[in-house]
Image 1: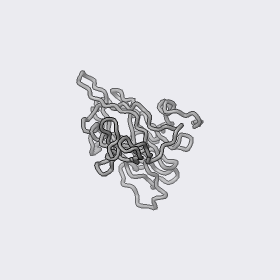
Image 2 (image 1 turned 90 degrees about the vertical axis):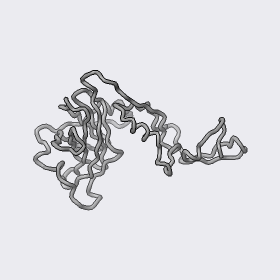
Image 3 (image 1 turned 120 degrees about the vertical axis):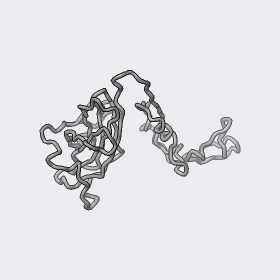
Image 4 (image 1 turned 60 degrees about the vertical axis):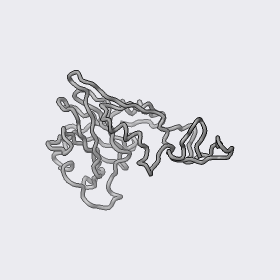
Length: 229
C-alpha cells in the first residue's frame, strides 16, 4: 500500500491499516516468546513514541506502534500482565510508505475485560534483530451494564511549558492514570505547525514591568492574573 504523506491526516491514519500477514504466524519463528539477542544497537529497531490502542469494541481493538526502521511488527495479547497463555497476532510490516507506523486489528478478544498487549519490532531481513518489548493495556467495553470512568484533555502543545521535571514531569497525566479510566479522550492540539514554539519565551512581567522567562510549572505560577516572580 502506498500512501501520499502530503495531507496524510490523523484521520487518514486511523482508518488506514497495514497489510496483515495471513497464514505465516509467529509460532514458526518463536520470536515473541524469546528474549532479544544482544547485538549492535544500530541493527535493532526501537519502539518510537510508545504504543497505543483505540477503537475498542467488546471483542476487538486497534493496536498501534511505530518503529525506528523498516521492521515487522510482532504483537502478543493476553488477559494477564504476566502474559501467561499469550496469543500471537498476525504480523504487519511497517515501511517508509506508512511512516514506519504499524496498526493491527486485534480480534478474538471477547471475554477479556482487560487486554494486555506486548509489541516488538524485528528488522526486515534479520529476524534476530528484535527491539526491546513495549507493553500496554486497554479495557474493552463491558458486555453487561456497569459504571464507566473516563478522562479527557486537550491543548497539549508539546513545547514543554508546565513540565516540572523536579516534581515528576507533567503530573496531570499521572493523576489521570491513577483513577484507572476505562478510556481517554484527547481533544487534540499537540502541535501548532503554523507557529513554531520556542522552549523558553520572555513575557512582560506583570509585577515589575520587566521580563520573566519561564519554562516549567514552578516558574509559570500565576496569582491574581499576574506572573509570580
